[in-house]
Image (cartoon, rainbow, N blue to C red; front, top):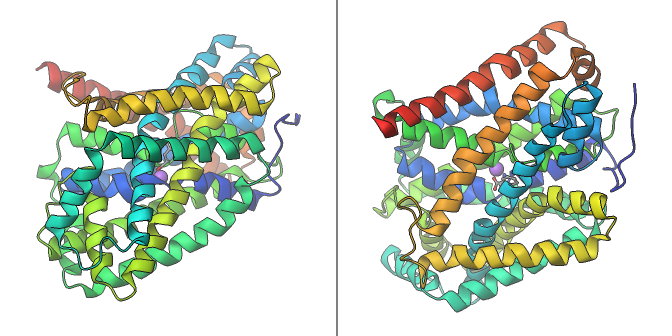
Length: 454
Ligand code: PHE
Ligand code: NA
């Protein structure tokens, strides 16, 4: 049994790894994206399919990523190569790490724009701009922000700097402390918001929307979106969790740890949905409103709540923090690789990569104003980046990781790393990673293709 040391550092304990990985997982995906895609896809059946994917595809693949990262003890690109060599296979498996790092950049570019909206809302809430606001005015305020490239650019830039500063500090400093404070606070605020929406009158309608089951509402499109989102929300398929796994202590068990992270991520998404939809229905808003959903509904709720100004301010601060810890993990694979490859310090690496994602982000934010005419496959740049990363890059990345750990790695290695004592549990993981997860991903791709061509 070997245990290399990671040159970038390691988490102090299993608990710190859980906090860091949860910090990566819980982000805009839970609070902003999940409610709006559930809304666009009719809720109910979509949510159920999403939950199924978390359990049958996300959890086993997250275990696989942690396993490879901890075995390789390097950036995803180098860990994939190292572990492939250990299994007497081609070092070209590092390609999976490459594509993942690229996906991280692309995701970052639109993620940072949305995080910028959140920062703008922190300021607006602090100024009391949403006091007693109606839903129509809230919609207009959001449109005004999107139409203002200068404001978007400022907030996007602030966010990029925040993320890069923490990345410069390295694995152990800053990040650990931030997540430890942020997670409990986020939970408390979400619960308070949930309390408000429960008493706002349309809680039943909101819950019914999220959990009713009508399979006839489900299209292959929606299934693809649910699959893509299960990867996005758990930070899978691009190396974030693999990178964080490479800093995990050898003594910690992977299975229980991963289940905890997936459960926390799922709870936050469901609570966010149950906080937002009752407000949507109480104000006769459109659940299918899209990316603006959270930015229009919540200000209305806060505007009417006692203490709503301070409370809304705090809420958006916490969404910003959640986005921030996720964005850090989007860049960590690329940063770690550059440090390993060129022997550079993290500082210069972060400045270089920061500039790159900052530029990409400008392309993404132009989608709402001066670049709104640019169309890629019928989508604006922002939607295109979101679509290709979540629905193509991440599921494909996950598929390769599943095939790699299930079929290429010797069982000796996977058994050693997972250290599962109950044989039935190892068998369950092995069957899902070899058959269920790859077949599910491949089948959904194929059905979507057939439907598009047909
Ligand atoms: N999981 C994050 C969220 O839900 C997004 C993310 C995706 C972060 C991929 C890292 C890697 O917001
Ligand atoms: Na998430």
